[in-house]
Length: 416
Image: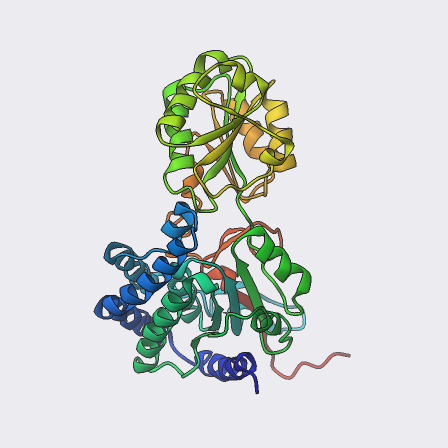
């Protein structure tokens, strides 16, 4: 029996056992997992150091190494997120609706676990803990298949979390990682219809599309983030500069970082130069259209059609001057990835139109796109950011890992 199939069988047994656990049992396990991360952090850091060294030796871009690297401070944040999950209301058993039918049957719709959740993801070891925590809280077993770049980190973190959960009384197999980094292992995971209840890919466009196109199990599609900040003609210039620089530079290697800047033609000559200077001072390479380059600010590369649709995940940004709100909305809906989009404006009507007409999971007025995050949205953590429209959209927290069942209580009714 293959490694993947063995893990899936264990996960199915664990899922059945998890469905019988209480909220208190699962909360206790989350606290144990949080404490274990701190108690065994040196083991995690040592494993992570191997991954980071290998990534740097291969010439991996600095923002991607930043996503990979763990520190004591980052582990502390991950541990706090797990502990915070224990304080959130348990969605399992929540009654969504209830009514007495004309025949006297009492009908309720309640939240229940998905069962077995699988994740295929890239170089983000924090995802290992977030996914494990969210699944344990919602009584789901989880199978994790991380990328080769973070293999040592993911396997060590899985060992720490799984050991703590089992020690706290949860079933063996509730948290598992696929050790093989071969593509064949990922393909096998995608094909386990009937054993995997939902598969969540998290990473670059190539990974996500591969899963969406090849999976035989249900998939929740998380999206890449070609996010925009649009500076409207009635924007506060100082606010616009702060938001653009933060959205691009705070953590350029993550999916909610801004990859494109749009600015109204009416104000680009007066407002854009200082924004470009601030970006260049921060080390950002700018790919601009003709009007952007005509300003003569610094060294602006010529933008191509490809730049408008590129998720750089790096200190790079495209910049385009637009004629106004109509063109900005059209451009974003054409090239965006339905992730996170922002407008900077003091005009209420324009802000309202932007909110209503932009097709994205998160739309902002006068705020950075960097806030699209489960923790920032008060979800405790996230298992990914969905850009699809079925079941879940935006940062996926606890409720996204549940489904529902109808419970019917009768007193002998039969259908005539």
